Length: 134
Image (cartoon, rainbow, N blue to C red; front, side, top):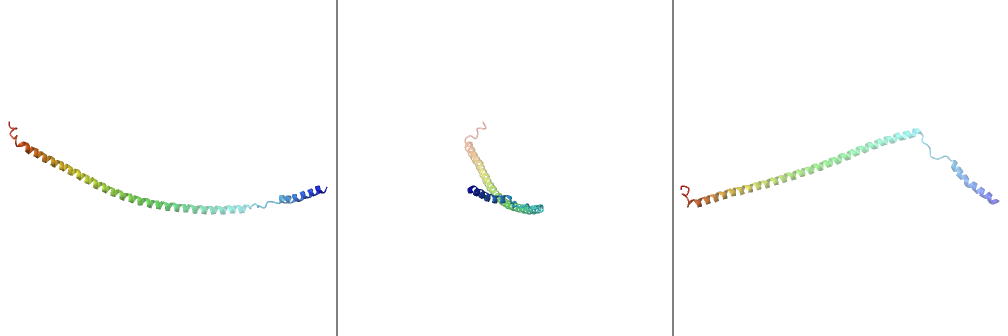
């Protein structure tokens, strides 16, 4: 009989702290509505400041990147224009040399034709001078 009493006593001791824990109110307190609205207002103000700072930094970064890119593209454009001008001058010089070469070839051809024509005319005239008169 002492065993069932001990068991009941042990059961009572073990269940009493759980009852006291179960009856305690939760420790988290519900904030007052005024505190919540103040916190929301403060957080919204901080959010606006952070957003304005982010926007300013983004514009600054974009402007800096655009300026660097613009300068780089202008430098590349100048280099390409210089290279084009140099290539155009080389092409003009080659074209002029080619024109002079063809002019010389044409002149030599005309001169050679005249010389051959005069030589052939003078060789053929000596023996057959009166042939046309008959």
